[in-house]
Length: 313
Image (cartoon, rainbow, N blue to C red; front, side, top):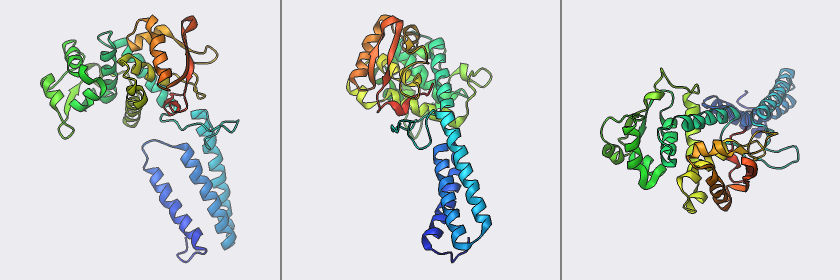
């Protein structure tokens, strides 16, 4: 780019575009909507640059950028079920998702693992197994603090950790009291034997593990739900519904809408008959817009505020 390129606004735009593309290349996870926007900006800038300079090769690059933007938008829609401009076909704004469709599939694999392998059928134990699995997946080890545990489990933290250690599911380098006393500047390295590399059932990478862990933390720690002072099972149900949501926010795969109460109960460590009461609490917390448990399924959809956490079935 010529150092004296005019107008100045074009020169500044080209500089900013170069910086934006370099920043994008440093991302650990793709954002195809953002990338499509960058290609569109490049196309506009190169068309203007070609007009200013009369250089036909720049116009060729502008057309290439337009094609790249279109291809990237199509890839984004295929992955997320929505256009890259954030709208549906009816011009209805759709909230951006925290997880991609593939990450949502990995998240559901973790939830299935928790339901199948948790050493005790208790909501607090299931929640601890979930969060510790996400903290230690891939290597079998991970750092935790007492603050992590009390944030997840409040006053049940020490009891639940003791249960997991006694069951052999969790190994500590010291005592439970040591873990509870550990601080962020000196966390405790814990081990989950079933997640060590030789036996770990998951195939996702480090960045995806971190993304799913953050997603789970946001769902189970939702402020509006916690203000209702729900039990742990309600928070697990919030996570489960988010993970099993179609792009429009409705629960379950089409055409068989809804989620099987038996599968929900297995993950949340609840009797099947109690799922309806916890679903009603999520409606009251503005997490579910509606909840119907007739016919052995939970039907409904996420509210707009919860939609960014949906797992994109």
